[in-house]
Image (cartoon, rainbow over all chains, first blue to last red; front, top):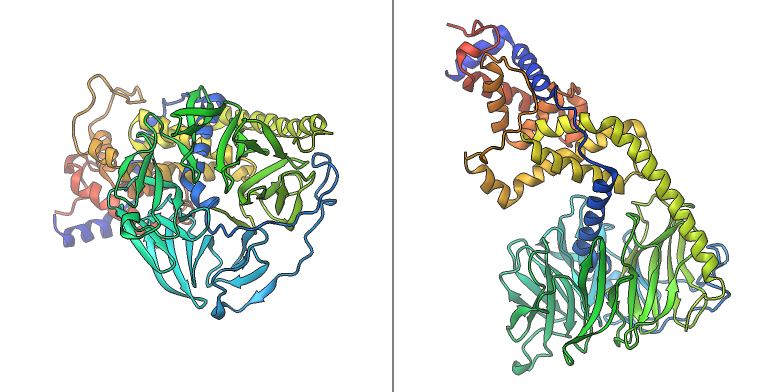
Length: 411
Length: 198
């Protein structure tokens, strides 16, 4: 049957008989299919898995990026638990504008780093206008900025920005993230064809060409990723398998590519001493977390109530969230002493909401991006261990739960 | 040092209570939705995927994503459209996974796994031939014809669900019909092949 024949057929008879035949066949195929095999429990169970995988996929990026660290001045107040957004002190410092063309290569850190549209509120209180309003993380590497730009489909691209303009855009693997080290002077990402790329102020290096299907969990070391035997400072990147079917990997600047910890698929963070915050075991829907110390080859602390997620810069504390969440994300964040396992602080603002992003600013202060479901408001807040009350640094701003006006920048 | 220990218990009670209330409301609403709509959604999932097992997988994932976004979908009249969009995307994404491609690279059917959901005993062959062609369409083209000719969505509604242009909907439908004309035996064409120009 040739094209002319097709056209003749369509002209004389149209598509309607075929469309009708399809409708009839579709109806016939499924008319006896009246099953309802899924229960609320099975749907909720799947939802929890999706929630966990989303967290794994974006943890680096959502919590990730420039960690330029210095103490934060936070006002103390009365009773974190019984305060309301209206009576928490609001930071009064006025950000100073910075000309994008004259980037301060090393802003003196003093507070949280967050994005508000194209405006990057930097740790020193200055603001920097980025070329795009769609970045979800930024890292300042010397006099250039590296930014991760994620679209609605989850695709990630990496912009290199100099003098306020994008000078190069690179594709990165979707579902992964641009992840920085603790000091914020070294970053890494995975390319679509499986290269593990590290980048720093004046150089970059491909650590592996075999990480397709893996996501970076944490970057340790720096400020470069050259082999120490060749005069570099050295680095280590820990990755988890996207399908969580293999043990987490550790790839370092010396060329060693090995499992991070045998039998452990999920690693949330590694501190400078090499201790790992890991999921040590699973109990039904609950994850048990542990800190594993390779020096002693044992778990030093463990909890099945908390999920350990991020070491403080010195490793003295860990941020942790509830091991079991309800689909809305964590309702609160705890601070755990890594020596004892004791909870020493909790960020649990009043109202019906929770932190959607959080990260350390320095060794005893962390920042959280907080959404209040009841008030439908977003804010950036900081909390210092020893203070009773968080400080609202930005907001509250009205917005739906999926459209935050802010993007907290963390490690 | 324990922060906010002074009113910690009260705070936990209030916050936890709010969240439990919200979750209880959500679960109640969602359970009602499941009871009312699940069979219909499963039928659509079956037509999109072509087998019962995959249909249930796709539906479960789609409903889980709906559950996570339940409060976001404030217009309850649009929930079905929301789920249909997720199901289509899920099915497309399944096809992009290597294992799925491998699975479809073989004609072997798992022994004993016959998942035909209907019990109709009579088919002159047209239905089976047509179904075989539809099953061979790429997932996006198949989604177009399922939404148009089973869900009876308009071209504009189909375009909206799939995030494509109306022109693409028209061209995909046209190609699907062309494939049927070409690959369904003439004797089984609608009208007994009378439409063929000789």
